[in-house]
Image (cartoon, rainbow, N blue to C red; front, top):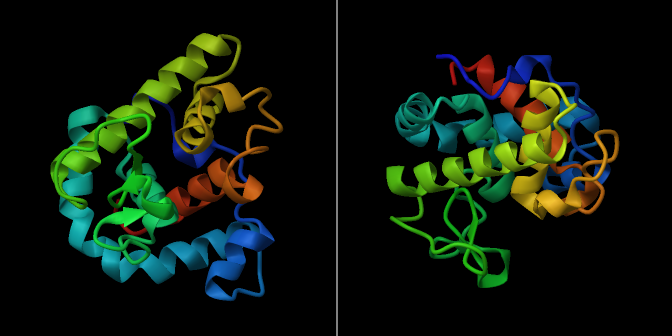
Length: 185
């Protein structure tokens, strides 16, 4: 399946910060921590795999990136209370923020995953327009960062995660996505 937004395997990444790694009491950080976090979510993620792949095909988005966002945002559903997270502001496994979007579908439905993926695609396009000199992969990573903190937060490529949750959002998501690729996503 071709992702028209870039190749996640070609995106540079530093992986998870200490703060993110501590979610699972990991003693490692960086790419290794991101891989372990993704692995800890794999059993829960498997129940969504067919929907993730279906939505990825329909939207020409890499399913591994969708899985990585689900892993980061909700730990594949484990971090949700009645479908909600982020102090009741964000809904579903992709954590659609009700302050900016009207969530659709059940918290783990195809509708929900489609909406989250469309939001990501919109951010990738905004970053591409904001930074026309950036490569396709740089815009892809910038869109992932914007999924967490908005496109206005992305100011430079080198520091795009400043202002994101734990200061590592796109780097962690990219590292998790690269790991999910090896699991058939």
